Amino acid sequence: MNQHHASTGPADGRQITLRGPAELADALPYLMGFHPDDSVVMVALHGGRGRFGGRLRLGIPQAPDDWGPVAEHLAQSLISGSERRAGRPDAILIFLCQDSPDGESGRLTMERLRPFAQSLRTACGALDVPVLEALCISDGRYWSYCCPDPRCCPPQGNPLAMPGTTVMAAAAAYAGIQVRGTLREMEARLAPWQAPDDAYAQLQALDRAAPSLVPRILDEGTKAQVAKETLALAHTLMGRLDRAQPAPEAVCDFGDDQLIDEDEAAAVILGLQDRETRDRAAAWMEGPDGHRALRLWRTLARRCVGPYGEHAAAPLTLAGWVSWSTGDEPGARVALTMALRADPEYTFAQLLHRACNEGLDPEALRRCLRGDGEGEGPGAAGAEEAGEVTGAVSAGRPAPHVRGAGPAANRARRRGSGRRPTGTGSRKRTRGAVRPGPARARSAVAARRVRDIRRYGRRGTGTRR
Image 1 (tube, rainbow, N blue to C red):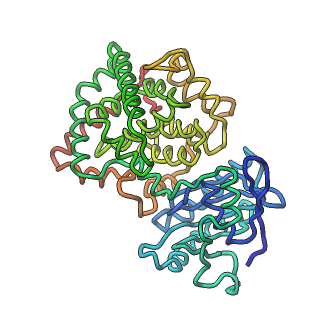
Image 2: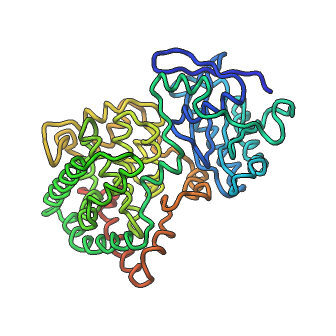
Image 3: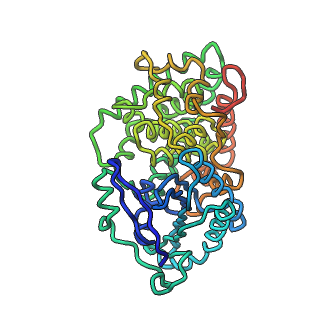
């Protein structure tokens, strides 16, 4: 076993020292806030004791041909991002997390991913930052790619510790840190409906609403009225959700889905495609309003079915913003990643995703969005121009990149891990489940008309914010 340690600590500043691969593998869900299945995770280490710094997660690319370019980009992204925040890292930890299809072939998964691990180690070494440990976690066991000693790292791997029995689990419980479950479970809460009957009914509602709403949103004379109607309806739906009987999280989403009908969901989804309306809706971001809004944005994201999958970028970005604003960074990253999967050019999601990953304080944007208005548009006074809201995210920083990944990494993100949960962003699969050929084409035409709202703003800039 490689003799090394890394340090982390809860919010009160106490340091927790992790020694060896077993404790590092156990700590990963607490570092991320969820179990990052089907993911590559890289963590920067600083100082002689290996203090945890920045971290980066990406779905494992399906195609081995992508592993080399993705590895180079991930290494560059983590190191350059760390340099901006806390200085150049002294070492890096790598985790490859993927269960086998049958749940019993973890060792085969580990061997299959070994070239990817080697590419990551080589990419980090080329930038003069050593990889302290590289672990594969699969089927409840872990393997080290760095330790050749079978006495401590046997070919069959070592079992992960039982949940809640380690020093990291105790420290996390003391600090109030929660692990949300798996990444797949978190994505499923935001994914489009897959039940054919429900999805088809929602698709029909979107098709009915688009021909009347889209021209009104694009018309300067009626645009403000549509925004007012959209925000008023959203506020009404938030109140309806809030009055519902509290339910466990496992059934809360189902209950929320039953409280909003298809036509109401379609009207708000289409209205939010206007970036100024979306910016005003973003002011519901904290306190009771934030909780109610988050439930609504999740519900609307699940209603973006078939050809309207791209329109989920707006509610997903709002869900990510509320999560980030209320301190739920893992939830924010998942929602914003899915928003960029729905529309990789959605600028608001790009900026928020980067700002969240760089550990910026969301208060700058909250100040911009707070205002004296009530009901339909709190925060409108702080967003006279749509660009002010998205621009506030990067205030005080010189010319940031708005994309968090290069071309190879983007391809990998869109492909996902190959074992994405049902409905997590695959529009092709969703369309086939809900719409026959000619009718599907009509829906696609309606969806393309809605895209004009995002592409052409009040000044005809052609940017998607």
